[in-house]
Length: 485
Ligand code: ADP
Image (cartoon, rainbow, N blue to C red; front, side, top):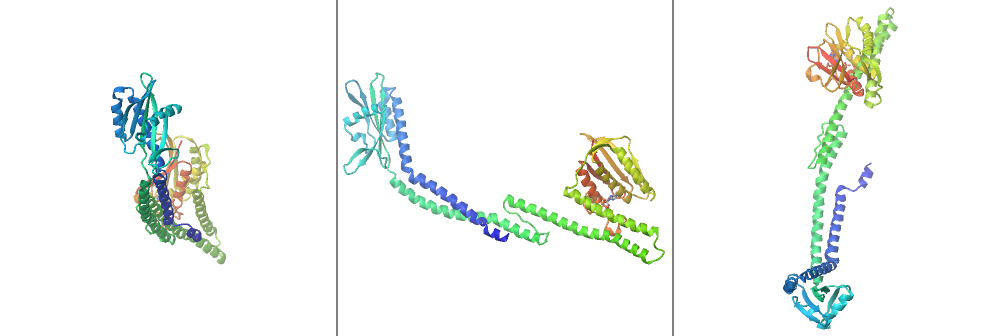
């Protein structure tokens, strides 16, 4: 386990890898957009701007009187040059010319060359986009197909006027050379890269330490817990997940310590509970074997009683473990519960009468329910058994059946009423726990396992019922179980 763990990368390393990947992607994106595709993007933006200017110019032709002044304004605001010609049937006549930029291509062209654009645009469907680049050897602009840096865009298009004559507009806009910009950006990119790498290293260190610190702390506390130190304190950290983990572990450690306490109590209790009958059985058996005249029915009865008590203790332990492991399943059937309980109580009455106890069953109607007959009877008899053990000097226990409406449905309740000492209020929530006994074991008159009520609680939960108790010190107890009808 340790070997495979040590092969896994630490969280810091993983964070470094993620950060490096993230930084790499961001830098690559910046480099592609700002360096590699900058020229292309800039050119296509310029072309679409020029076409927008053309659209505006075309819309100005609807008012020929203001056309020139509007065109001039547009040319200035967009830093482009514009030349316009009108073609009537005889010749081409210049309408206006806005010479705004310094190195204008169209203003360095011959008139004839400009007029020839009309034919070319006509052949191209009414508009034509050309690129020109400057030839420094010949000190002139030349038409080029090659899309390159520092070009000039010449866009010519034809619009018909009101008389049906052609108007030719030629727009020239410069594409600024991006080479020097790219050099600047390259330099900036180096600075950005270095800054981002340093920042991501710092961020990784801060992040990884804030993530790992609480985990390391919790881990060392968990190791303490594994050694059996249940009082260990789990401290969360600055984020919720670690806080929740530490809360869960604190809860687990408190549960572990409870279980550990119960385990030691169980060992102490069962040892005590089993030792007494075992000692008695061995003692009486030896007595009967070794001494003449001791082989009496009374002594044999003591051995039988002790053996029975051991059997019931072991049975209780088996039953609770079945209930807790989920092995026990509810088996529902429709039956007359009043008759069934009356018959069980009747059997018990025989048994108690011998010891001078009175067990009374009170029911004013016969009720048919659908529930698990064995489990509900077992739960009720457990309560009856306890009541007989703890009842007061009148040695009376009453089992009362009541049916009532709880606001939502009909409920059938069995109350087991005794006149014993009752249970102190602060102990009431605890008596349902496994192995919990209110009395300390040595002063108990009854030899219970401490499992009875826990079994009742689990049986009732299994069949969808409820149980509870009303008791206070000195006033007897009323233990009840109930099911929905
Ligand atoms: P036990 O086998 O020891 O009776 P239970 O789980 O049945 O275990 O009961 C738990 C504790 O609750 C008992 O030790 C006892 O102190 C208390 N108790 C249960 N029933 C009664 C009762 N009817 N009157 C007073 N105390 C009771």
